[in-house]
Every structure is written in structure tokens, then in C-alpha cells.
Length: 115
Image (cartoon, rainbow, N blue to C red):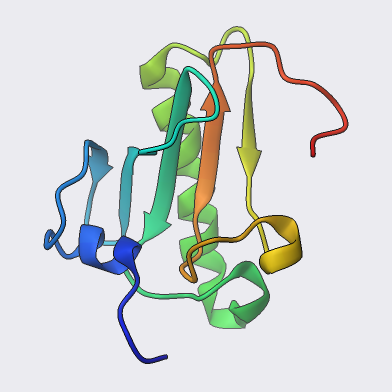
């Protein structure tokens, strides 16, 4: 893959971030360019470049990303009014960092369709 992504450096603690959750497998932190009042990224510590690169053995970790996203939404107080989870896959979808991440967005009314 070459150079480590900024998200891997955050997961390793090499770059500071406003961490809201961390455990052995997952890190969640506030987005530095928030698109909603609450905008948190949930990433695996192990690099999976994008959802399209995930394999059959990644199912437990993918499920954990979603469960942590739900817990983060609850702690942020956006679970009652609603929140959006977004996973971008590839440049046309808006993927900017090659490290799988789930956006947790909330705290405002969301439009549909997005983008």
C-alpha cells in the first residue's frame, strides 16, 4: 500500500485526534471538517482500504464498526432524533482516505437523496 494513511497514524496514536472511543480493534474520533453538528469517524485499527476490499474473514470487524457507530450516536445524544451512517467506496463516492471508515452524522435534519 505504500505510505500509511492519516487514519492509521491516528489509530497508532502518532497523530492527535479528538478520540471518543477506542479499543483493541476500533477507534472513533471527531472529523476535522465536520459536515454536521456531530460528525465522527469510526475506523478499524487494522487497515482495510475500503469496503470493497473486505473479505469473508472481516465480518466480525465490520459488524463491530457498526455497533461502535451506534454506541457513539447514543453517547452523542443523536439516537433519539436520528443519525446517518455513511461508508464511501472509491473516489466517485467521495472517499478521500484509503482506510475504511464509517461516518456518523447527526444533530441536524438530513436531506434525501444525499449528494
